[in-house]
Structure formats: structure tokens, C-alpha cells
Image (cartoon, rainbow, N blue to C red; front, side, top):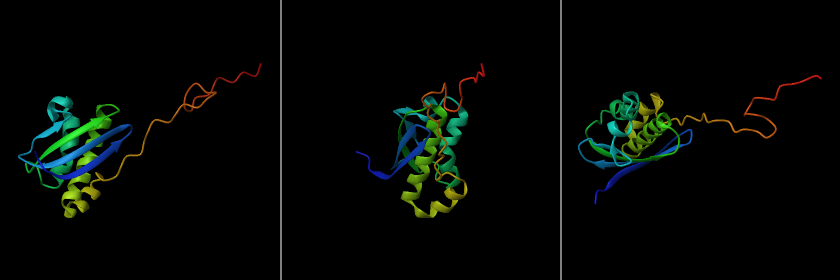
Length: 130
């Protein structure tokens, strides 16, 4: 069984990603599929690989990711956040470069809940004077 070098949890909107770093030759598996197969949009694949590019660790680790919730963009951002956290856990010297690129900051923007007595989160029913 492969030994995990580090674990990072990433979040974005309603997506949660658990990222495991293992010794290997650079394979990235997301929910059992390769990263290219799971994220069909090349922008999402690029987003996932950003922390590796910044820390010059491409091809050093096998990365295993379990991600659920939300849509593909939120999931890709959650994976990026989790991977950045795992790289910091593995080697503390990565912290400065990942922090300066904004990969360690959790994006707090979420959908606002719908309130009772209103048709939407902020929308109000039309006012009628008579």
C-alpha cells in the first residue's frame, strides 16, 4: 500500500476536496480518473496544476484526489486549495510562494440562502400601492 506523504483539504463554494500526496512520477487521479478525463475543460486542468508549477514539484508526486459537491469549476478550485495545503504540509518552504500566489486562501464566496417571504435571496415581491 502506498504511503501518504501529506494530506490537504481544500474547499470552494460547496465543493470539498481531499488531496493525498504520494511518492511517484506525477500522476494526478481525481475520483479514480485521470485529471484530463475528469476535468474536460483545459482551464480546470491548468488550475489544478498551478501549485505544482509554482513550487517546481511537477513529476515528483502522485496525487490522489477525492472531490465532491458543487460544479466542476468549484471542484477544480477546491483541488487547487487542497493541493497547496498538502504541499505546505510536506515542505514548509513552499508556504511563501503559494501564499503570494493566493493558493492558500479559501475563497469564501457562496450562494446566499433564500429567505422566507421573498422570491429569492435578495429579490422582493413587487410593491403595489393599490
